[in-house]
Length: 271
Ligand SMILES: [Zn+2]
Image (cartoon, rainbow, N blue to C red):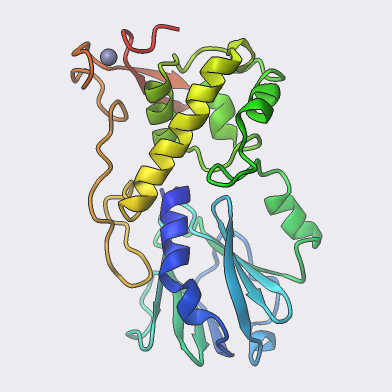
């Protein structure tokens, strides 16, 4: 599943090239998770001002309106001067004066949704509940600690809920908790400020590393140039049940939390 680093790498791979482009035509394939919400033809003639990201949404700002794009479970974006005719899994093509933007999404949990502005009720519904961006200055340890003190759920589940901080999906939550030496089952409100500081730093570290490696968590991930992530993130615990901890050699354990697998080292993450 594309996580925040893959979405950001995707954004960086076409944002500059599409800026200023005029939309010439939009073609839809099979239905995605949500409908576009506007007749494709009405987008013709609009200009792309910028491409931003909020959580795992790409916000394609037009001179009128915004396209919210989500990659779902299996989506990937291409942007090129010319692309082959749309295939069976290509469900959104936007021809522009600077190239074709295409969403390929075999499982169709992704979407492209048109909204008039970020105040549009649909935009508020999709974006309004998102927590702070972890790689910006808004993500700050004291505020993070205050927010966690309000939660009794396990720290892993609170991170993954995304309403305090976005982008910490299953892999990154497991990895960050390992780096911070925190047991994933600890209740969020039990973490002291020094431990939250460590976690804050660890979250930044794992996301930065993934971002710098080109978006690395999806085996078949490729950015909008069609280049794949340079290498798989070298994970410390994720998906390593039974294998020795890279720090202490203790076998990594797996448990289920809220239908998701969590991986941790019982020695390095005692509490
Ligand atoms: Zn260990």
